[in-house]
Amino acid sequence: MEKEMGKKKIIIIGGGIAGMSAGIYALKSGYEAEIYEKNAIPGGECIGWNRKGYHIDNCIHWLTGTLKGTQLYDVWKTVGALSDDTEYADIDSFYTSTYNGQKATLWNDLERTEKELISISPEDEAEIKNFIQNVKWSKQCLFPADKPMDMWGIKDYIEMGMSMADFPKVMKEFGKLSLEEYSKRFKSPLLQKLMCDYLPKTYCAYSFLVSYATMAMGNGGIPIGASLQMSLRMEKTYKDLGGKIFYNKSVSKIILNKKISTGIELNDGTVVEGDYIIPAVDTHLLFNKLLPEKYMPKNVEEAYKNPSAYPATSGFQVAFAVSENFNEGETIFIDIDPIKVGNSTFDRMYVKCYGYDKIFIKDGKQVIQTCISQTDTDYNFWKSLSKEEYSAFKEELIKTVEKRIINAFPQLEGDMDFLDAWTPLTYERYCNAYHGSYMSFVTTPFGKQIKMKGRLKGIKNLYVAGQWTSSPGGLPVAVASGKFAIQRILKSEKKSVNI
Image (cartoon, rainbow, N blue to C red):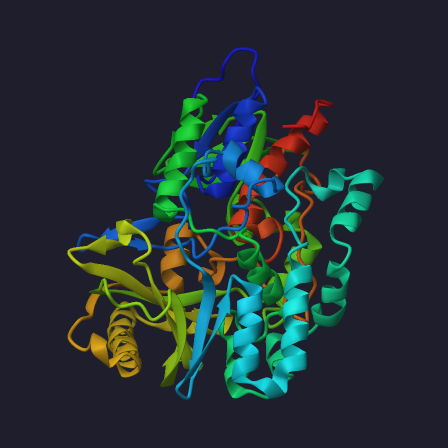
C-alpha cells in the first residue's frame, strides 16, 4: 500500500466493472491505482458461479457495445473485456413470446420480424410497420463513451444531433409512454404480450425499442465464456498494467478533512491514504455508510424518496440443468398459472436456455434459468422474513417454478435438476445492492432520467463511478463511468482527457 515516488495515487472502492475500468484508465494515464473489493473475486454483479459442476451466469443476457467502430466497443477493448477476435454466441433472435398456442419472435432480422408479426396479426399491420420503423430509428441511439457529457462542446452536440437525426421522433412518441400503454395499440393479444414481456410494463417504451435495436444492429452480442470470465479478463488487464487489487477488504468510511478526502478506512481499522478517491459502489451504500448523507445530490435523494416513479429492479431467479437437446428458443416467455413472489403476482415468466456456450453444458445437459422481476415492495417482503421463513419460502417457490416450466414443456418431466436459486437479498448481501437491485433507477413515464455529474459538492478530490451514476445503469454505464472518473481527474489537473 506504499505510494510510488512521483505518482499520484487513486484509491478505488469496489472491484466491479466500473472500479476495474477506473483502475485501468488510471494506470494508462500515469497514476498509481489501488482497488479495495469486499468479495474474493472481481466483477461485482458481472459474475457467475458453479453448482453441481454446472456454471451459472448472473449477468450478461446481451452486452451493449459489441459492434466494432462504436465508442463503447473501444472502451470494452481498452479494458480487455473484448478483443477483435472475441467469439460471440450464435443467436439470431431477441426473444420469443407464446400465448394460447401461438408464438411470435423478435428476430435480429427486422424484415423477418415484420413479416412474421403481420402474418400473425394482419389487422395490426400498420402498427407493426410503425414499430419496425421506430426500432430502425432507435439504432441511432448509441451510448456516448468518448468523454462525459459535462465535457462536451458545441461540436460534440452537433455531431450527436447529426448521428441521431431520427431518434428524437422515437422519444417524442415513446419517451413518456409506458410499455403497458403501448401494448394496447395492438389488437392481437399475443403481440400485446410480446411488447410487455421483456421489461416490466411500467418502463418507458423507448427503452424496449432501443434494447431491441441494439440486438438487431449487432451491437448486443453475447461473448462466449460468460460474465465471470469477462470480469477476469479485465482483472488481468488491470494487473498487467501494474494495478493492485485487495480482496476481502470492506471499506467502512471515506475519510474527510474539510473539503478534501485523504483516504479510506477499512472494516479492520486500517487507514489507506490517497490523492484521489473513486467510490464505484451502490450510491445507497455511498451516502448511508461511506459518506454523510448531506453529500447526496438532490436528484438522487428525490429518486430514493419516490420508488413508484424510480423503482429498483431485482428478481427471484432459479437455475436448473435439463437435456442439452431442449431448445424452444434461447429465451421464451410462457403463460403460467398465477404465482405470487414477494408482494407481486405473475402470470408470465421466461425460460432462458444457455446451451449456446459449452461452459454451460455438462454430461449432455445444459443450464436453463428464469428470473421473476421484483421491485421495492417485493424486497420489503423478503426482508421481513425470518431466516427460517426465508428458506421455507424459497424452497416452495423453487417447486412452484419447476411445476410451471413442466406445465409449459411436458418433455422436461423428470429431466430437471435443480441447481440454485437467489433473491433480492442475495444481491444485497453480496453487492450491497439497494433493495437487491441489479440495475440503477429505472426510467418510467413518472420520473426523469437520473444523471450524476461525477463530482460531489463539498469534496474536491472525490469522483463517483458506477452504474448508479446514470439510469438505468447496467454494464455500459458502469464501464464508461470508470473512464469518465479518470477524465474528470485529468481535467482537474489541466491534462488531456483523450484516453
